[in-house]
Image (cartoon, rainbow, N blue to C red; front, side):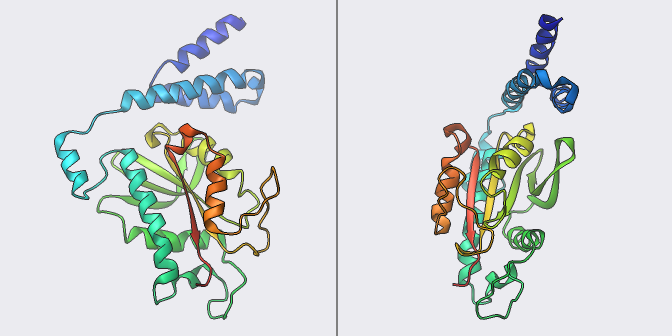
Amino acid sequence: MSDLARRWIDELGGQPVEEASAALDALIADERLSAWHESLEFARDKQHRLRRDASYSPMDVADVIGLLRDGPPANVADLHALLCDHLTGLDTYIRGDNSDPWRDFWEDERSQRPSTPRHEETCRDVLLRMLRSRLPDGVDAQPEGQYAADRRADVRVSFKNYNVPVEIKKNSHQDLWTAIEEQLIAKYTIDPDTGGHGIYLVLWFGSDIDGYRGHPTDGDRPGTPGELACRLNESLSHEQRRRIGVVVLDVTKP
């Protein structure tokens, strides 16, 4: 029976269709099958790669010309690159615009040196408004994007039939060092329509903010947004760095 079960798992892992993805997700979620989780997760990873490869289609001449003219995204990798670029560009706006957008991320907005960050969902909504005004026509950005097993990413940016999930954390969040792997990669980028792409966005409220934890391995607490981005990138494999963007936005007072 074990050999038969392994054969069925292998067959599911070799079918690049949505039904096979759903079946493997359901089997992994079944606690009664804990002894088979390793085999099932291996088959699911294989199945997702096959499904992404099967859905790949090269750009035609019109798509290439549109891309070079700063037109709409041609594929999910292009959407991911566009999104990373716009989010990175927000850093200059947040800390450099004379309307002081950085204040929108703090509770005491008129304090000379505010000390209490706003709620994470409120910060997300502020970012979403800033981002929407910069995205090309047809590109949609929504909060609480739904993924498999009723899991929800903070933001889901989509165009045509592909999308990129964005997971947002404050640098004071207790899951700062683990959410990139345990939430973004494990729960959201497994959706075949993402092509494995996702963005981990951290809001930097300063190195002295309450709750900012050191790195779980050596206890080091990066002192700047750039250093934090480097440490988070180091946690990714070479393959993951091709599809997972890390953006750390400085929202402190300039």
